Length: 387
Image (tube, rainbow, N blue to C red):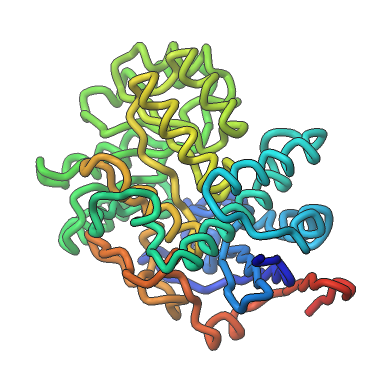
């Protein structure tokens, strides 16, 4: 019987460049990972080791809130899973994760506890695929090994000139689907105007507007024929309001901040979205993603997973994308890393999934050590250790 004997929690921040500089018109809000103020991106990795020598990798959400998820993983969440028998099937993983969610129900359906559970779930799937000597995409029943990739840009401060230059250079690099993180019409229109007709343009505005304002923006943006307008309404769970914005004709995408699988049912029942965006490192891991995929099919809603992280969660999302329709591409944060944590971070318009068992995610020990901020280790018959 394979048993979980050690759980390592690794907080990492890798510097990146994105072709932007700080100017007087940049935002001061550094809480969002696309903010112009950020020059490095954090991630939170989890490594689960077993008594058989196998290990599995996961990734929990948090970015600048990673210390909170880190505490959950090195505390009550990690202690729940330490010593557990490793699941031997997808059903076993689902059962164990349900037990964990029941235990931790008082902490809500989203937030650091759910992010921590997401990381654990991904690592368990990695372990399961490795124990079966299968790439995860094969275990999931995917029919394709090569998937499309779309470039998710950081914010360029709503500067039309810089936005236009960046989308054009991204197009010239071969990407035919590009997502902005801008809120000003002029910047979005500048991108659409410079891009050739075969380029799809999406916009994520990160919940800035009231329903009234979002309706006005959706009307103004409708002639630009966006692939979608993402999370236009504050608060993001105002689903009735989101449904009103959707009536303006611009395709609406959301779900990154949904409260678990149940949150997606609420999105679907309100008719609030055209595109569902479950996020593997936030919603409950691969187990929850598969449940959302099945529900979206029932409600006839298109799915394009969210993915603005770069560790095991990105590779898990890539494997999941391979199970979807060929029109669905993998979102990647389109930035240039100072050093790549693993080879797949050198992004191109297509990604061929690894044939190695599991996720195919194995970070460089040298890069991991160089950019490690903190680490915690839980092991059987030992206290939590910190570094």
